[in-house]
Length: 133
Image 1 (cartoon, rainbow, N blue to C red):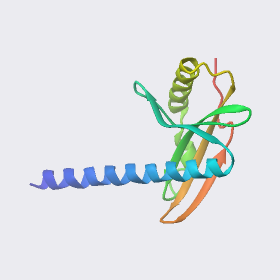
Image 2: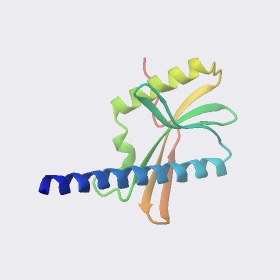
Image 3: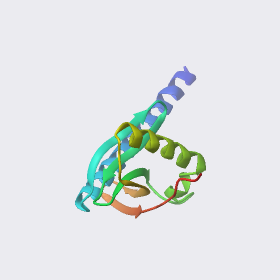
């Protein structure tokens, strides 16, 4: 019985984490819209690859990774966008660009949403990383 209770607790924690991340993505989309970005896609996937937000500015198509945390006590949220994550975002972006015949220059941003309840600090890091050869 203990294992079953533990599994329910773990499932609830995963669900809470997912809800928290989705809320952060909504906050990020609202922030971008206020800044004049046109949101093209949310949680765009192809196979196992995903981009949290794809947006358009006057000059760029922007692929945005959103990291939501309640605190930065252990690690800054943007530090969790490691090399492997970057490569996966770049691979997804390439597929999106080809599929949609995009001619605009691409940019890769990270938005961090730090906080809880209704108090958030949003950090937008433009050109957070670049595609490498």
